[in-house]
Image (tube, rainbow, N blue to C red; front, side, top):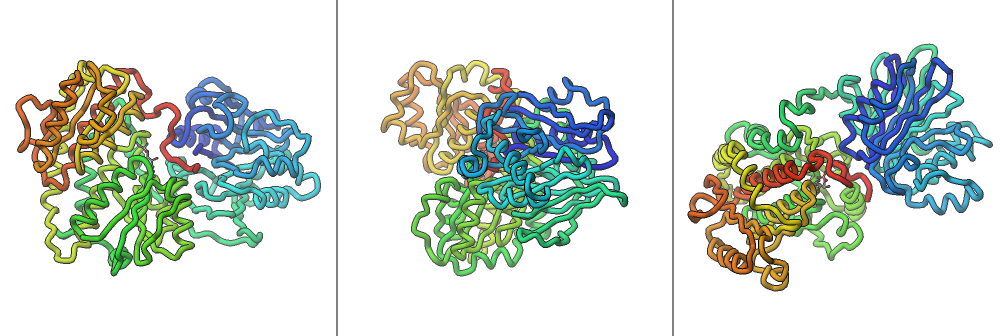
Length: 599
Ligand code: M6R
């Protein structure tokens, strides 16, 4: 994953880069580093270490003139998160310095072919890149040396390179991993994500795969050059962005996760106003055409978005009557099933950058299928590369735990399913308005959940059980609890527990049951009795119309098909408060990153 930021311009480079790295820390945060041209000593400095950007910012000295630099925040792939493996990485002589996001699949082969006898400091694939450039630079111009290196790399990369002999240029290259270029009159910023440009530049350019870029300072000021894979210079399309700085602040909440949980009713309202501006759900005609005469829908996604996809299958089949299959992207990419010819692919991704999904998209395009990406980031790779995209309007999601994006994804899936329904009988618009109110009601009672989990969720492991669509909420709830609190949690179909897993139930093991559907109420309640009889500490989440007197969390009634969007909220709150109790790093849980840009 990793976040990269480079800057050349009139501003103090360390300010721009450190601010940018803070904003990109969601991409990885186990170590970080920076290289800057120190004008006072006419030389480059390099600071890096294990730990967060705060450490890089507070514990090193930036009290010198610097107007060019590159920085990195890492999610470890090759080698442990330690000082040596942190980026930037320098070539053996120290001449070339590189930051890299991605994974070079053939770095060992390249080492064996071109770098025999080199001794590497780190375990990273990035150091190989720095040294390849250096070895080619002994026979070629720097531009050619870098382009020759880029041509040899297999895998994913977004790279920034500096030649310490020339403090007037930052070189960049990219394939599969994201990178954008922000331009202002007095400088240029290169970064993994638009967020790093907040407060720096509204004008930006998307960098396409295999493009080679130079950001240069010359007599006339700051300019950039972009070259296609055969070396022909081209003019990229200029874009503008107005990022809302409010959106990326915590707004008085102690954590982004809690802020984002609390924003969910307004996400649903925003979706309604965007997809039903005139009191009726509307979807772009060209998007609808993707589904015309299709016999099957394939949904691909990862993690939480996959769980949204499972609900998407229910909606497409039950509301629109179109057979639908859902796959985990990393599995689909390399274990494809037999595909129906007349079908369309729906890719679901909050970030729009998930590498597993991108690998699928490349493949399905080759096979001639059309695709729709449902995403929160309309400028993302998956939005750009799919045939069409739809936005979920959740606003920037910063906490690693996906909450409001999930609610946005599921809501948009409901809307597409309704619009695709032939007889136009689906009348969920008013129901969605009611849903937003019910969501507010449970969020308002969050202190009750905070207290509840203090005495009821005390073990190292836990279970969520439910049937039908509640089972999908259980999967999402359990992912969230393990991801943020590190309690080992499994989501199980309630009736399946007795076929093996019930062996794990003993005194005090928490079992959280979700019951939102009348037709399976009695069945799930029998399963609750089975685990209670074996000592489980049961917490029941139910709906008002099917509640029993000792149920713990009772939700306002909403349309049964929308209940997963409501029932997930108490589970998010359970996760949040449990993680808080355990003193976890809520917005940045260990070993994770927000945007998973490596396969
Ligand atoms: O950006 P995406 O929706 O494609 O990300 C997919 C998963 O990595 C993501 O949902 C992950 O599971 C979340 N951290 C879960 O909270």
